[in-house]
Image (tube, rainbow, N blue to C red):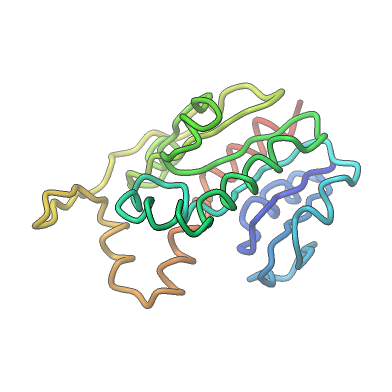
Length: 198
């Protein structure tokens, strides 16, 4: 199977598919963190290649509800529309099967509700992080290793957050972004094992 992993520089999902014998290529404007088949550039350069499956992680900075307090400014200056347009370019890709993931955000109302919402604790990681999946030609991703949800902190503002998310808040901005954007290994493995056999 030929698998395109859009907007990934960690190599996590790419390498999960490669380990099972698939041809997998990641693509991002950033270089890959680990050696592997990676196209550094705009994903739209390679969307038209002959792919069987795409796993896409479009940037959520201007789409996720966690940043809702900035939405008015982002709508006014066009950043939110750019995020929507990029997301929809992936939706319209002529690839027979895809999974597009994003946190809970505006695409549920702008486009359509996700097919499912998964959690890392369903795949072996004691972390709470709601992740939406929009699917085409794929079954729902089945949990593989349900564990405890991990520690939940309640901030002074009343916001509840996973220990993992709290810990990432202490990092420098680039390191924090990288930690929060990397797919959990258990989820990547489940994608490869369940969707790589279709």
